Image 1 (cartoon, rainbow, N blue to C red):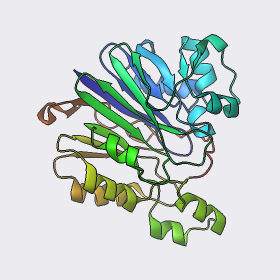
Image 2 (image 1 turned 120 degrees about the horizontal axis):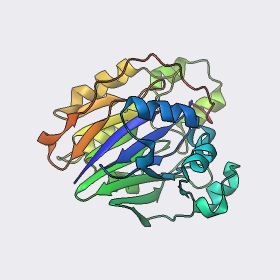
Image 3 (image 1 turned 180 degrees about the vertical axis):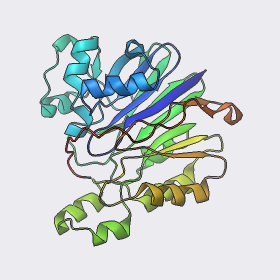
Image 4 (image 1 turned 90 degrees about the vertical axis):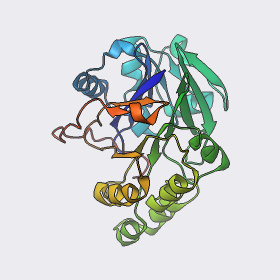
Length: 281
């Protein structure tokens, strides 16, 4: 068994992560317009019909903007906690809304999706791991601090989308007001580059093959800084920085590291981002 993964977009202007096998797939969040998601799927050579469900991490606009249109057009079930749905303000047909709970595993074809709570400034935020056979991928963004659950699940992953939101020095020198800097750095904010790197260095499993660094701040981080920082410590692990502007390549994740290969070359940043404001960068 293996999985195919891509970040269709990652940042405060919209988040959407694709995880699937050759028969079925899911989205974790859908913070881009439906039309933009369709374009990016087409460029990756992925049929929308392969997507069987949307899982929602929390209610911020950059994670749910495209959900109502996407769910209606493609008749997709939306897995979301009742509290998140209540606060998200989305209009979705009742028959398409499915609740999930902490530590509950949901089967979508051969995919097994498990949610766990995380620390973030939202009403009921969750992270996810997705497994297919022996292969596991984690989606770990919008996290204020690395809790025990995050560490445990990170240690199971053959690949992970891991937040590296801000560089501490850039944030300190930024024009952001003091309260916002404190909010970002707080236990319910975002992971810094150094927090993400410490997690990676201390807890990555020996079988991890890909690390997709995600949810970079536009103002307080730099793809070059992040890539250089992590590549220095990555060894044979392929480090990818997810873009705020265009989709990543599609990556093939298997339980044998030697079998992993990038399926498509990374596309040039030729597409303007969909500007939808999140809670903060």
